[in-house]
Length: 150
Image (cartoon, rainbow, N blue to C red; front, side):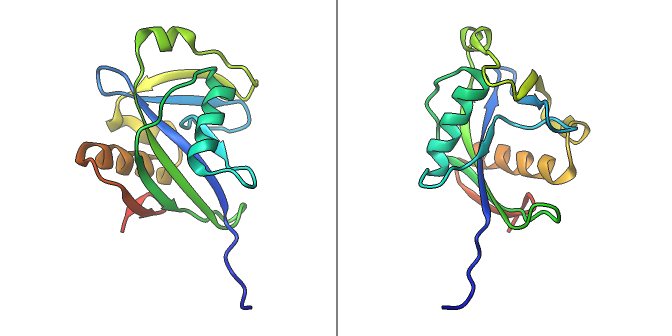
């Protein structure tokens, strides 16, 4: 059998507030902001991993909407990566008040206007989130590479 790709797989949720801003979280182990989520465990689906990570990181149990983006995003220091972004919908004020950093991975959260995402993380993350927001507005899933629709 020829060699096959064995990418790391991760999944995250794109949450919004009523003003259309994106929820970003501050991981303690990164030098930039991100969306809630994390790596998929063996035998786990990306959707199940996303729900698990939201529970572990934010203390929330929320229904996830459709997949917005699947992004082929290899990184020099991490190898091949396949990233899924799901629609987390709009968080209510009650859900916002319920956010708790249960596992210690996150130190802060905030809503950010989509047009300033470039100031909060690497360019490919900003591209992925812009692509996810576009997918949500179109009600269609988008395939991307390094955050850019293909």
